[in-house]
Image (cartoon, rainbow over all chains, first blue to last red; front, side, top):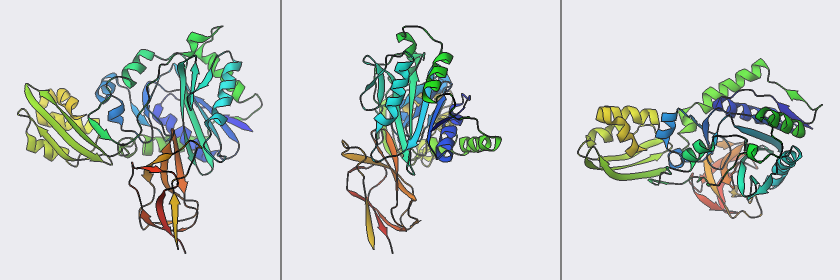
Length: 316
Length: 79
């Protein structure tokens, strides 16, 4: 038996909470979900955000960063991308094919020339259209993946492939960079994204299978999880693997060297060595501070006023 | 009685996994079936559950450490 639960939200924080709620609540049979996020960067459970993406660029673009509960690397979502979630019983060893193959078969059925590539990617030819990751707990496995239908690949490229920050010496999962393509560019007969969603859902969850919506009480639970977990600093930044950071160059015409450590997202051993910055004050403000762009921004403003944006570039 | 929990082999190809998070601290009481720690390998985050009830006596690795399969990760003191 397979069922689906409708989710029309495009809020990336809500959608992570929705998925976790469904994983915890629907414990019988298989569950298949389709959902979409407005532009957002979704990082793996155990990744160093600052190493994977350029936080300052995302702030300028107004793109939020959301940490998910599965493993793997960083992905960019927008409304040209469709996400799927497949929840099933965990049987023995980790097996990607058991979750991937039904999706690939369904894609083939609706005219997408998709095939499996590497461990858990779906590709058209050699170009990736889907990456996936899993979380296993309590005898159940949640497998989810992206499906690039008509995403803005230029933004994806800008956010996830450039600006890798090598100043971080850190443990944690590093994202792989792959050539990607949009499904819409490979269809023999064109279809809209709405058609694609509907036809994929009909293949995965045949007519007659339960199509549910959350009750008001369940909805409230999802919102609680969104606010208490996915919007929290503890989840998004506090789970950053321990790291040491070091960067040097020129700031405001003077040589600058910045170094610090962070464990569980709390900064220590901070040094800003530069004639244009009060080093003692910098150390006082940074040590014990939360690893967080807002917090760093406030500290930079206190230290150098109008040059805060430039100093931020040396800190993250 | 002391019981070791090891890094499981989750895929035939798996050689090691990363200990991502401790969900219990040393000295905490653990019920059978309760998750003890999280590991990541090949994009899967897996919660590892205690097989018996007891007290978490020792965390043998730190969060972020890469651990070879079948290597002990935790020592559980059981009755």
